[in-house]
Image (cartoon, rainbow, N blue to C red; front, side, top):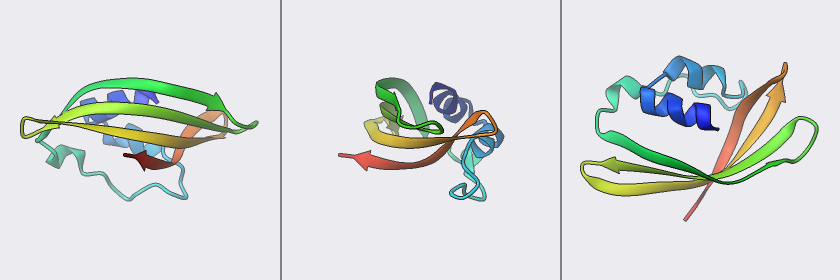
Length: 94
């Protein structure tokens, strides 16, 4: 999770797509076009291995857009393929 957050901060789209499960991975993220988002921090709330190849991570990511502070609270699902964890999906929490 931390590496994916860092990849968003550094706009490393190739890394994000490579660590996204192929069944749910978008074609592109167009991070280079996003000049407004400034990432401020990541807090992992809970991480749990839920099975032999599955895990969940609850986190809050803080950011600013146009000077306005925002936060994204999500519970993410990960799955291990070929000994590497891949982001599968996430549910946003209000």
